[in-house]
Length: 75
Image (cartoon, rainbow, N blue to C red; front, side, top):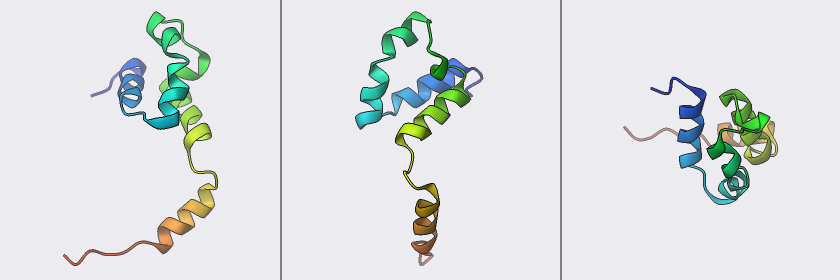
C-alpha cells in the first residue's frame, strides 16, 4: 500500500500528535519543498529518529513492565 518512502512518511506524519507534531512542524517547509533533511529520508532513518526522540526512555524497563502487565481476556 505504501510503496514509496514519501507515502510512508506522509502516513506517519498524519498521525503525529503533541510534541512529536511540534517537532516535525519545524521541518515541514523542507519536506514540502522536497529539500529533505537527511533524517526525513529514507523512511527507516525517519523512523529511527522518531524512536530516538519519542520512544521509551528505558526500552528494557518498558518491555519488562509490559510483560508483567499482560492479562488474558475472558473470551
